[in-house]
Amino acid sequence: MPAPTPSAGPHAPGAWVVGSSSGIGRATAERLARDGYVVAVSGRREELLDEVVRGIAAQGGRALAVPADVTDPASVDAAHTDITAALDGPLELLVCSAGTNVRNRWWSELTPADFDQVVDTNLNAVTRCALTVLPGFRQAGFGQIVVVSSWAGWQYMSAAGAAYSAGKTALGALVHTLNDQEGRSGIRATHLCPGEVVTDILRTRPVPPSEEETARMLDPDDVAEAISWLAGLRAKVCVNELVLTPVHNRMYVDASAYPPREARA
Image 1: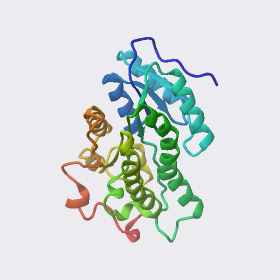
Image 2: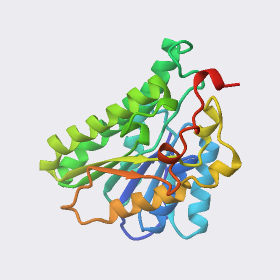
Image 3: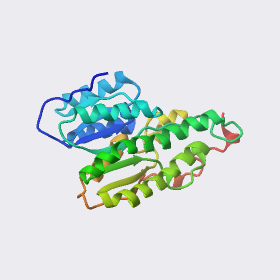
Image 4: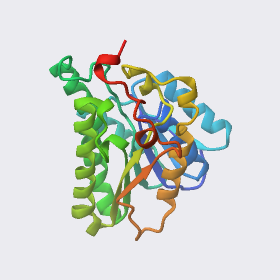
């Protein structure tokens, strides 16, 4: 497929937002475009990516749709090649926001296939994307990776289940290695751990939250604002980890928020 072409304009830094067809990724792409980035939006659903690009263009921003399956190394490599060829400025920022979970999260119900699917999307895909951008970041002497993780990647969270907990917890260690080994090349990374956010993944919970509960949660725009702030920090500043939650944080104040296995319908 030919490389996409961003709309004409002065040279501007590029941002690649993976998992940007909806939720946190979409809100982040829209916010970064308002901040002046040319944003490459990636995901598997091309029609939704095109919708994101049209919305950004309607607001005066610049974006390009680059479909990619983060579970396929060849697809990730091809997307990166297309993005770097299409941008009129340097690719400076990678935001990894693709994520998934399964409904059967307890060991008594979990299958090897489900476990592999969740870990491949939530953990291995971040590695694939990082490996594609790091050579260019090293050459430029600057680059930033924001890994959208979860409260479950910062503190143990029973309701997340085995696969999600394992993958998200490992992201913290992955970001540490990036800052340890790549910080000397001017590259910084952040393990961003949001609490509950109103996104489609809520529907995979064994007991989905009520409308009253979701009204108190973070919106995708809240997380996008945090990512915008991270990207705007001076190049010598690295926020290694950032935890962002609703004020009404059910992890603290509502022990009944996650019914035990026996209580699930």
